[in-house]
Image (cartoon, rainbow, N blue to C red):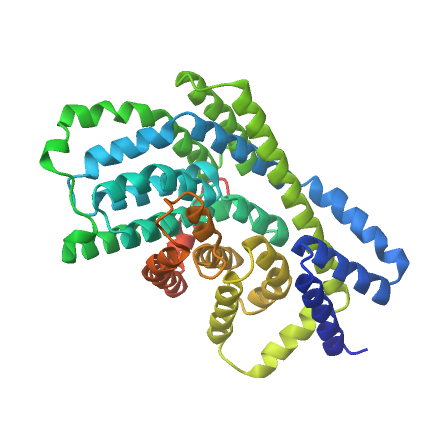
Length: 438
């Protein structure tokens, strides 16, 4: 059978399995297993065991449970309430200030958690009622929380980046550092948009009345409560950037430091430790199966010559390499409307990574573009995860249609950020290229 027909059969099997509702990891694994037996024979089954042994012992993946533990303890240390109170005191007097402050808080939460749900759900519970009670329009509030929450997979530490690194061989430390400026840029774009829009339409985000404002002394007092967590975040990223520790070692320091912060704030409990450990176990096992399914699929996919076939097809098109890169980004945007980021990674990376390398693009830069694209997927209807996370914590009067309407301008802002990263790769590459100990 020709490689072209084999490729068609392979992806047809995968699509059929996905349509049955089978999880993507198992769909990929089963499709790879069928092709392995068909093309390479029963003796090739050792590849699955070899892949499981090598990848489940991957040092990089150890960072995932450690960062989950760090996120849980920082969340339980009371930092969310303190952060919002601080932003309320400092930015409340500005039009749209509470919404802009919420974006900043979500960016900080992104640096603590590595997932998008943490900032979205927490600010949905704390900031959303506060802003609605102070006359903020739900369109600006809902969009700001959902979009800013999606920064959790871009601003390091990012679980998505850890999985990307384990599947592609790219440095997770460089991916982490490469996400810093793009994350800050997107948060800045959101803040500027909210500021401009509320300046033009003051009713969308009225300033806090004068009688509710605080003195400078009252503003400064609350800064003490957030100093320790922010120092911990900067420490974790700083030692990665300086080359003092690997991301996994930095994750261990972060987890230990988060426990210390919770002890200092008198929020430590065995119940929190138990829940943090359960979350870490769940996420790690899930990621382990994802890696095994994707790698098993990729091994057999490579063995039968599909990457070389696709590269020849693309080379035969005779189009500019940037046209191909734009096409890949469009495919990712479309898939993001319907499939979760982990599933998209498993389906597309075995196809896209060889093409990216053959075209001479930086895989690190592509990894940042990929992550931003997945971030867009978190807020894109109809199945954006953040939209449903937010709906789960909103008051009864807010509908899913309200959330869909509110997110539209923020989706456009994220796409603008993606275009800027494509046009100016150094936004993502400058910091990693200047890392110490790289």
